[in-house]
Image (cartoon, rainbow, N blue to C red; front, side, top):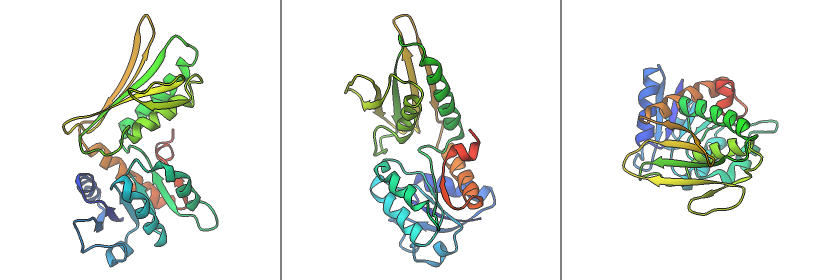
Length: 241
């Protein structure tokens, strides 16, 4: 498989390493610090799939550049979801684009998210328990709360009727899940969901050790995307949840 990497930072380099280990070829590295590779270059033209990890400000335009050239996209950037419905629109119709999105490509996080949904279903019958969330990431992360935290909150809201929205701490709103975002050091990512009553609390946590898990999942998603062209894809499709 020939891969174009869009965004050649720490994640891009981790993806490159995993992809090569799995027998794939990196044919283009589009980045602000690399003027040799462009969307109009021969390398990008030869790619089977593009993996995009950049910034919230640049991601959407990068997706459109890929769509112009009919290139499947695996998107890892978060913080742009106000454009999600537009992206999904490109993935429908007679000639649908192929777009795989996840707020987090870690297999462990996605297993954690499924546990979160199941726990929310159970807690729906126990109104004495309130729920909140904490996410901690490195100081370079631009969006808050994390895309993963938003996805986890959506998983709770779809299964816990008394929660209909989320707010960023310290704001409080009735019926909303409070999310605290912490930025410190080089933390790859920690997400904790906390249910508490007057008598006790239940807490589940996922902690990433490094970016490797994200890179591995993104490469798996690229492999899946190449075999399932046409439409909007998610980790639940890949993992069968």
